Length: 267
Image (cartoon, rainbow, N blue to C red; front, top):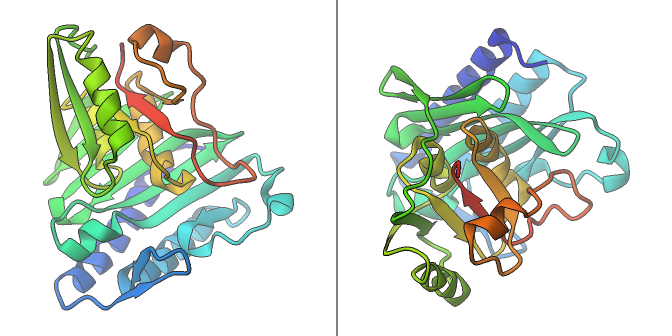
């Protein structure tokens, strides 16, 4: 299913979508709001259609579940063995703020697990892709490097948090880490780039004690898995050992809302 040709095609699709997003980004942005009060722009819709059309050309028999086309009944998707899980524009709030921290997310899910993912940040000219069985890579300004997934430094911990969604529970979790590490540093960034920072080795742990959807995490989850990292369900764990024993996030649930989670790079 995941061949070099498929990898190349999905990267090309994400870049095409990203370029169209930039066309909208570089002019005045018309913002509308969905029923749940979350923002949506012309860029979300354009990207969705480009990705949907591109993925169907790869294999018309593999279904696509996208944030902008999410109303597929569970009864129809519950028996999917493979499917594409897509966020056409992750980090719409960052897109509207024009800080560059938004991404195109495309993941291939096999039996509820992300086996391949592409995360493209067009404004940063940075792309991540990977899967557990073939490793992870980053392409920045045309230069490709393999992601190594170095183990955590047991003395210093770099925590990455949401730029737009940090809450008191997350702050309390970060404070609790200071009981186990002499030096805890916090950094912030938008969209699925938080998880990609873990895969890149620039951060160690990302607690998300707040709502996210499956399409927000799946592509970056595959990239993180490619270097030995994990995203696990949060149940008040405070130590690395407790995290290691926790269940990993799964996909294509009846309710597409993720549970609270903690992402971390290889221990």
